[in-house]
Image 1 (spheres, rainbow, N blue to C red):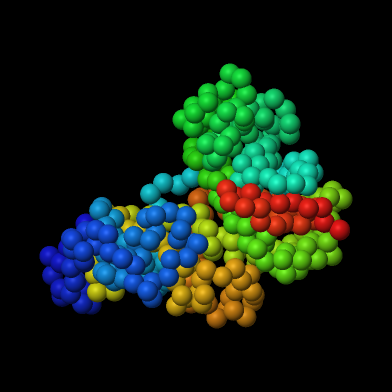
Image 2: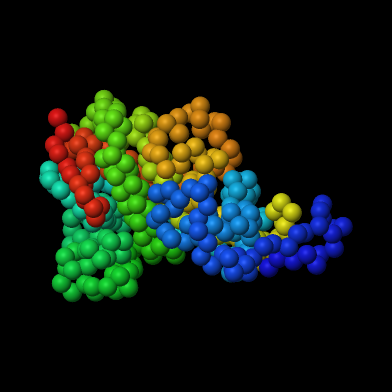
Length: 375
């Protein structure tokens, strides 16, 4: 909770009561001010636009329900740089053991089956990622019956509306809740019993799917960037040739992957619990307070990211990265525990394989992408 009852002399400055979201009836459904950007990075969840309105009306620190929302880059840095003395994660997910060589081979095999034409990218990639991630995490043989059942369950969790009927084999529960139960049982049967592993697997798959979907959409809209990345892939690494794990020299691919993760971060809010009383600006937070920072809003802030709607991988070029304010880039630091390496590897390997094989172009509504064979 927040309080101003602690004697002021015990702190550097007196605590100022926090504004409370919803206390002002004008916050119920205010129109967006013209100078408040609502970019693609916030369009993925309606709640993000509401957070923007609340910040504009209440400032960067306010109470919203049981949480205290912190919406400045300096707050991100304060929370994420802490060693756990003051800001403690609510729960630790298991570290995700990923065999990157298996992930690369499986992704290559799956994407090698794709053909030129129009695809509904999110649905197709949901299954592709699941079939690659499951053997890389569990040690089950790629393409085996147990691995396929787990992959079907995993892909249904993240794209259930389009995959529910056609992806689930006979005998597997055909609902997201049933799929999660089937995934949990399959992981247990494979000997993957670490606490939190189920959530880490699902989070890594869901986040990698969003990042790849965002990256493909923007590359389809920007042929120059697509050609640039393809040239880098083909000069350093030919995925279709089966050369093993991708080298660490795909700098432009990595920059583009980070830009996609900026535009579509893994979480709207990342929560911590205050372990010891702490001052955040002029506000005092007592131990036990639930606080949240927002990757989505930070990455849409034009003060930190000029033209935040624009796809610009050069934001992550070394000179600009050095000049960036601490706490402005937090996507990798806020990925679910243990899922970061899997997400980044799946995204960079997936886009490398796609660009080596195909030219991408938009194909109308509904997330459809046109694939043409690359020369």
